[in-house]
Every structure is written in C-alpha cells, then in structure tokens.
Image (cartoon, rainbow, N blue to C red):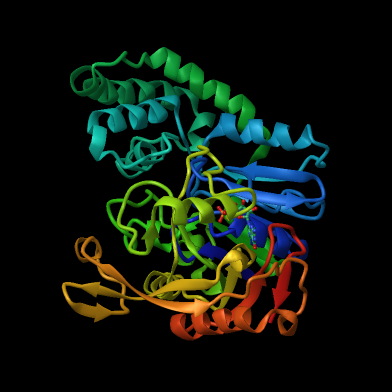
Length: 424
Ligand code: GDP
C-alpha cells in the first residue's frame, strides 16, 4: 500500500513530523521531488533535526529511505546529512538512491545565485540551492543522471558539450568565471565515489516491495501552491509538489497510491515572493511568527523569517483538492492558543466579486481577504490526546475549517513531537 504525505499550502506545514510519525508503521519512505532547498524539522527521541534531502523516516531501524528519480539529488548534502545524523547516534539508515535521479552540480547553485543577482528586486527569493537551474537542465536534456556516472567515456564527451553551452551564459550574461570541462568531470567522479554504495534501480525495488505487500510512504516537499502547474506560477518551485507526481518521481503505478494525507497548517506561512492573500504584517505577524512552529517560524534551510498569515480557506480547499486528499492532517493548532479571536480568510474579494475558488496568479494578485473571526480557546492544548478533551472553541475551529475545505480532518497535530497527535 502506498500513502503520500503532501502539503496543502506553501510548504512548512509540518510534513516532516507527520511522515516521521506515520513511518513507524511503514517499511519504505520515498522522497519523490524537490531538493535540498527546503527542510523538514523533526523532533524525536534522538533530538531535533532539520533534514533537507533524507526522507523523514530515517530515524527508525525498520525502514528503508529512498531518494527517487524525481529528486534534485545534491550528493554532498546527502552524504553530509547521513553523517550528521549518525554522529548524533541515530543508527546508520538503509538508503537507496535511484540510478535515474539527476545530480545538482556546483554550477547549478552558482547559476541560481547569479540569476537572483541579475533579477535584483524582481528575484524569486530562491534559496540558491540550484533547484531551478537543475530542473531546467533536466528538461533541456543536459542534466547528469546518476547512471551516467558509470560510463566514463560518454561522460567525458558530455562534460565538454555541457560546459560549452553553460559558458556562453557565464561569459556574456553573467560575466563570471567559466566552467572547465576537466574539472567538471572530476566533480562527477567525486560524486560517483560518494554515491556508489547507495545506487539502486528504485522503481524495480518498489515494484518488488509492493508485490510483497510492503507499506510505502511518499514524502512530498513544499505544498500545492508551489506546484509549477497548479500553484502561484511563476513564484513556484521547479518540480511538482502534488501526490500524483509521486507515481512518476518514485517510479510506481499511479493506482498504487491509496491514501493521500494532506498536511494543512492551522494558520498560514510562506517563504519567498508571491501573492499571499491572508498575509499579516507588523506586530500581529511578529507575534504569530515568534510563537509559531517549534521555536518560531524561520526557514529550516535558510533561517529566513517566514511570511505569516491567517488560515486561508480558499487556498487550503484548493490545496487539498489538487492533492486528491483522502485525509487532512491539521497541524500547529496549539500555536493559536494565545488568541482571543482567530481571524480566518473565508473568501477572496476580487474587484468586488466574492469567490471561494482559487484563481490564477494575475487575479490572485488583486484578491483581498474576506475575514471571519472565530472565538479563541485561550489555553494550551499540548498534551491532549483525545478529540473530546479539546476545548469546545478549538473543536469548533477544526470543524469550521473542515466544513469549509470539504475534506475530513482525521489527524490533529497539537505539538511538534511524534506523540503530539490526536486521531479522529
Ligand atoms: P515541513 O517542511 O512541512 O516538514 O515543515 P517544517 O518542518 O519546515 O515546519 C514545521 C515546523 O512546525 C517545524 O518546526 C515543526 O517542528 C513544527 N511543528 C510541526 N507540527 C507542529 C505542531 O503541531 N505544533 C507545533 N507547535 N509545531 C509543530
């Protein structure tokens, strides 16, 4: 059985925590898209970890962690991450990396940085992990697939071709140092050495696992609104963030994905540029940011302060719909315990028209939030294990959201730890 854990919003919904928790009953956890540009924060018996590339199931002895073909594989980051968890007494995880995954090269990160510099004020707020240049190259068919490391003759020819193409831009657009093909080849050979022990025909491995009835979790990065097709283009990421893409990015049949657990945050936060209708500012935002997540809403990769906002029904309903949600995990609800009243964005006003359907970007830019206020519960709900034990106003908030988005909230997360969870 395959279950996907994906985000309904702009990312940072707490997918890492939900994956880590669900991984207890899983055999294999697969990353199927994205790269080292976002982080998952996980708190468990070993401590607090920010993972960028490893799936959030690496902390269990019984699981295998898989990097699927859809991932932007940053080999030095992956190796560093494995070392960093082993250094903190986590048992050496079982890791498999798809031979069809492509590699983030050092020049992808440089291009990312150069392009952001060139765009100046119009930049995307990229984390400069090389993700956009990486996926551009993959689809332009000038990327490097892990399998290519094993044919050195072909690779020697290819580095010349790639360097030639890149150097035109480096010289004439960015005015930066050029790529030397020999050095590029050496970089690739370095990666080969590091990754060789983990390389695997992942889709075949998963095919066999499915035949044996194994439980597989697909772990998504970011959320619906960052999807390149269905998100707030162009302020999106460069790989699909949807559960459907899990089939491609892992190499399994689409009909094997039986459950889609969409993680949806009890308020909104976003990093990077782009329309954000329910955004709040000033002291109101600072307070939510300070209290949010676990120790504040700051990017797990960059440390950047996240943009904050109230829960957005329109974006979340759409976010859940595009994921094909079977279950909603409603997270960080405990954070809202300080509020007398909780504002919720229930609709958008676009040039005087009220809508609850998420529009394309040019209309989104014009949308004003229609706010409804719900009474707060004014207490700490961490530690509560049963739904009935939640304060009445808290249950009302959950049920209000559930009704508005139209998908069942079956998990409520009331703290960052593995056990801070209420099943409904
Ligand atoms: P991801 O990328 O979706 O995995 O999300 P992140 O890990 O970047 O951000 C979620 C943040 O919220 C992390 O700091 C988590 O430890 C924290 N977190 C997750 N669930 C909860 C929750 O229910 N309550 C609180 N207070 N923090 C949570």
